[in-house]
View 1: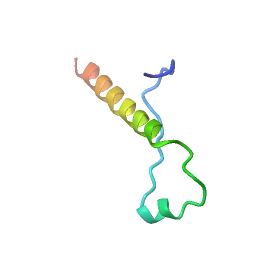
View 2: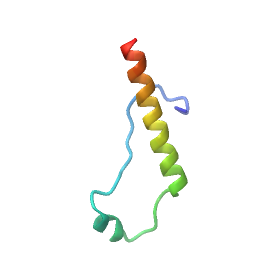
View 3: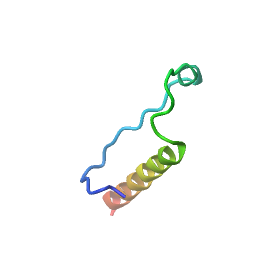
View 4: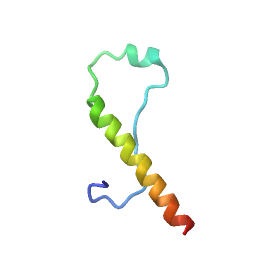
Length: 55
């Protein structure tokens, strides 16, 4: 689902190291469910776009 955005680009921040994540002072800014859903959407949309490009 692209939420009406006409784009194939996006941004998901993933900490570089477990230490970086562990030392974060504040709680996570997004729940795990939404993080996983966002990553799944990004992967599906990339696969779809690449499949259409090959056709």
